[in-house]
Image (cartoon, rainbow, N blue to C red; front, side, top):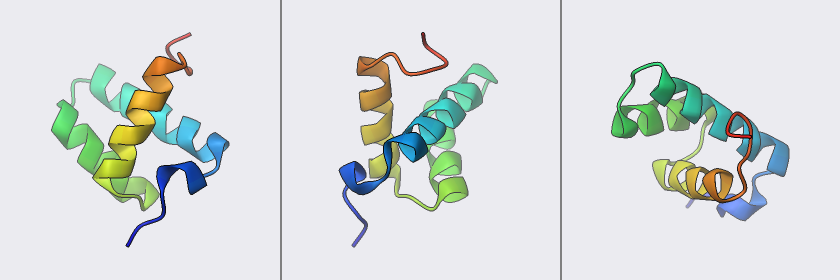
Length: 64
């Protein structure tokens, strides 16, 4: 069982979010970018989705 997203440190969640946005901005599809970022950072795709929602809601970089 993976750790809840809230147990991933904020700084790490922000790094994951930035990588996800950059992958999608670079032309990678949403599903493919989630899978790639999850693999790169050793988290689940569900955790990436949660980070994506949190980052979008809080306008984390690079969205500022």
